[in-house]
Structure formats: structure tokens, C-alpha cells
Image 1 (cartoon, rainbow, N blue to C red):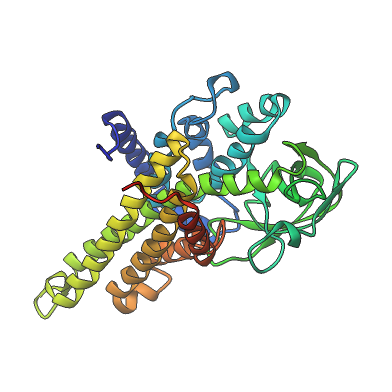
Image 2: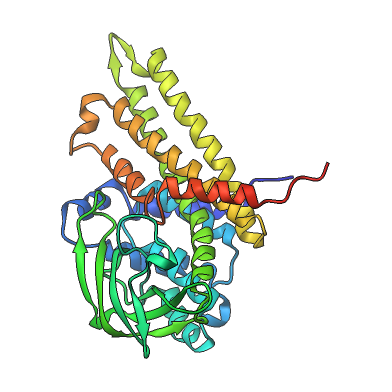
Length: 372
């Protein structure tokens, strides 16, 4: 069985790498980190022009109608570049929610705008500390209006609409709603990674459209998180590989006692350990990509496996990259911080590693026993 991407998909990877080298160098990431802009609007527009935001949107809604394998390739390269744009919120979450649960009218209105980057979407689930559950949701709907507070919402301060998970008394205890954020009170939140903005959304009797049937919201949410987890995992693997390459390049060029520090056993073992974790995570991501692209029954297991291993790999790679750079790696002037910040942020973006470990255990327990 061939677990590699096709020649066409690898060509897309090469094109994406070249594009991001030219349009998202470290200096562009630092501009957002040091400045007040919530994201790189120029890069976002260019990414949309490349068609990346339209990758899996069907052609009848203005998309390219490609597979999720192409989107996995793009996600990895955006992670490698630590791109400061709202791609994951708009593409992995909002677009997916509309594709899964939106009505024809909702799709016709929003998907073409998401495809061109004209509109930015996001997904609002969290409300307080801890993993949300239907019985802990305080946001409620009544007569087509929502009341409650959602935080932290990734890119909530720049999104044109949010898919909001609210409590309901039917079915699985939750319902999805689409809320246009123009009239919503939005307060920016400080996070460890300022290159990806977050906000608190205050919903005060805010007009909302049901997205899908009431009482099926939690089912849609869990499936949406599984699908997004695979894409986030590829983004994390891309960042982990970039951190390893950054550490290796520095170690090859940094001399101590007349020889590159890459020649010392302590550095060799450090980078070898990073390579092992990255390779394991990549292997699990291939599994996730297959399950996502084929809509396999194994998706919950594959998604949790990819997510857990990618969280571990990216954090380890970003941490060891700083250590390899020594005292200078901890300074503001060095770019090591980009990957450390992004690794920490992505590790909690759609639930913590512990949450996904619990989901992994549940998926393994529910899997049918292998036939002898």
C-alpha cells in the first residue's frame, strides 16, 4: 500500500513552499508579532488568490472541488511557515461546518465568499475552563436569538460570521447556529501567540440562523472536531519539521572548540529524538489523511491518533530547537519563538492533548475487535 502523496500533490507542495518562502518569510511573521494587526491581510488575499481557501469547496459553490489530501498538503506548508492568517478557523472549521450542516441557501450565500477569502468564518465552542459538554453549555437559543458568551474564539475578532454551539433541550443537547458578527461585541484576548488572534464574543439576544437540525449539534460538533484534528495535525507536523530544520541548520553553522556543535553527541541525540517524534507523527497523519479523504469509519481513531502525536512532536521540536540555539534561542531577536508559541497555541486550539488522549482511548475501546 502506498502511503505517499501523488506526484500532483507533491507538485502542489513544491509550489506552496516556493510561494510561502516569497510571501511569508520570518520577517512577515515578526511584523504581525510585533505589531497591532490581527493577521497578515496581504498574505490572506494572496492565499485566497492561489485558491487554497477554495480547495475542498464544491465547484458549484465557487470552489475547486479537490480532495482533502490536497488540503492536508497545504496545511502542512502553512504550518511550516507559521503563517499568520485565519486559515484554520475559516477553512478547517467554518467551511466544514457549512458543508456538513448548512442548508442550500446558507451554502450558496457563504461558501463562494469563503472560497474567495472575501469572508472569514470561525467556530465558537468554548465558554469556560475545561472541556465543553452539552450539559455545561450556558449559551442558549430562543426565538432565533442567542444569549451567552464564547471564549476563546480563534479569529473571533476578524471573522464575518461564527458557527456557535448552543445548548438545547432536544436530541443530543446542542444545536449549531450561524451568527453574523457585525453587531456582536467582540473583545480581543491576549494569548501566547499574537500571530493568531483570539476574542471573546458576547451574544446578547443576538440574531442567529439554525445550522442543521436542533438536537444534532453535538453530533456535528464531534465530527467537525475529528475532521479538523487531522488538518491541525498536518499543520503541526509542518511546524515540527521546520523547527527541526532550523535547529539542524544552526547546529551545522555554530562552532565550539573548533568544530560544529552538530558533531557533538549531545546535539546529535537531541536532534535524532526530534526526528523520531516527527516521523511517528507524520505516519499517524498519513493515517488521518486517509480516513479524512475516504470518510472512513475509523476517522475518530485516526484523528485522535494524529492529533496526540502531532501535539507531542511539535512541542518537543520547538522546545529542543530553542535548546539547540542555547542562550540566544531564548531572546526576542531569534525566530525560535515562532514555533514554540504556535506549538503551544495549536496544542489547545480544538481541545487539549489530554482531551484528545481521552478521545483516543474511547475510540480504541469502541473499535471492533480484529478478526483472527
